[in-house]
Image 1 (cartoon, rainbow, N blue to C red):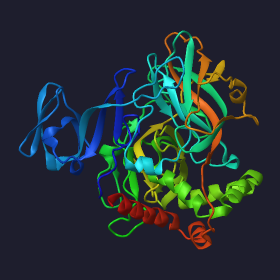
Image 2: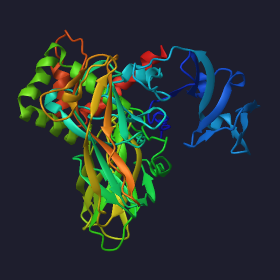
Image 3: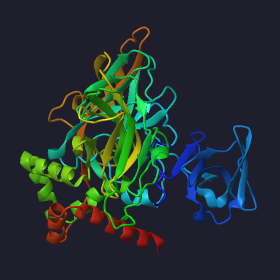
Length: 501
């Protein structure tokens, strides 16, 4: 098995570069996670941590590691630590550089990593949606990436994102919305769902915005891919380890992976709530653009057809579900074989959200529940899976409307964001951003709080197309099973060859 990609987290999933600025001046400290082959002289670098080939992420105590022969020697939590270089996948190299920090022209500063320069694959592939930053009391922190894949108005959709970093300050919640990619973004609605609940209850949204209060959550007892590799270290918890293999065929030539998740199952359990932290992979997000480009000068008409005809949009959704490129089947093992019991909608690709998927497990037998996923290679990234059985807990939910929304140049865009209607906050360039302020409801004594952003919108890719449509390739992708995966594999091979040269 190829080493899974562990590039996406620090800013949750900003691939390999983490930018930490020390003040508003021009001195910055960059911590880069580099393949060992990319560090020609490790003895001359300030190495502050490593990612091992087994997936362990190890941060060294200051001042970092020293190279002793073919091994790194350091302290970790005040205890001696040694690791051989052949066992290291990535070196965390810290360098001080001069740089100009971009600001947003708003009242407060931006958290570490908001505007970062990242490595080649992100620069080559980034196609996404708005970035949402939450004010945590001292800075804005990247916290959500809604309505991925909604590339035309006919595909406009709602999204429900838990804001893990949002904190109340002076009776207010504050968000920042930015456009950081080459597209025009249209946001229709931004409102909060503020949930007060009993301590120990975990609140998770499904794709339709229904909120579940879950207790007794159980983790994976096993997870393996089709080649017998143990995936549990990657999938047992929501952390920096994201299982996202390269877009390449398997050793047997397969264009699909197969993941078997195993959970404990109580006797007599009829229903289960699967909690998935997973979404569209970076390459899968890029394939949206590449497949649209196949249509050449007809791309605009094709996108417009989905705006005018709901059936055309439905046909595209059906294709994505059939090919499992952007909607993944969840199958439960039953005496009669694997049965479809739910689906997982893609999101991201930079920041996956927890999603709950209710499953009928009444026909499953034994004290274990096994769930199968068969993602096409190159399209998906997986962080964690967990499960809960039984009834959901009572929740107190406040729907909160924004009280102000101003762009960095002072324009009031509140009317565009308070309702789902024909008005949109349009962001055509990377200079566009706005701060949204919400009143914070009074807390209920003895209750914990979880806050979700309900947003709605779509985005328009900036495509420069004047060629003839590749009708043969389009027909193949839309009608031949797994042809989209083959397309992704071929484009990845081309990109990797070009990157090497």
